[in-house]
Length: 78
Image (tube, rainbow, N blue to C red; front, side, top):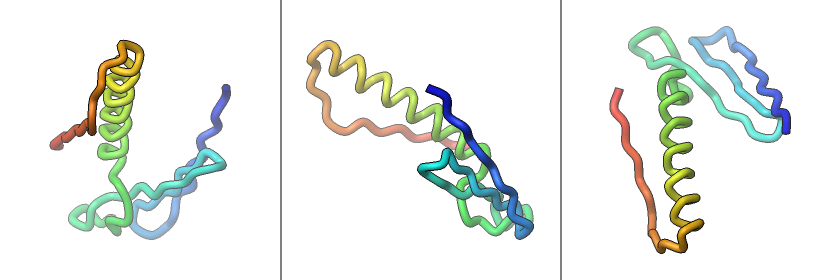
C-alpha cells in the first residue's frame, strides 16, 4: 500500500508540518539553534521511528510465540 508523505515548511523557526493525509505532526529545532521547539527535531523523529519499529517487532514476535509480555519501553539519548 502506497503512502504519500507531505512536508510543508513553515517560515517561523524550522517548523515543518508532516502529514500522510490522515495524521500530522510538527517537526522543529530547539530554541538554542533558532528553532521554536514546537515539535520533535528531525533526529528525534528518526530515532523515534527506529525505536517504534523495534518495539513493534518485539511485540509481534511475542504474540506469534504466545509469550505474555506487559509494557515495553525504549529510551534513546542523542
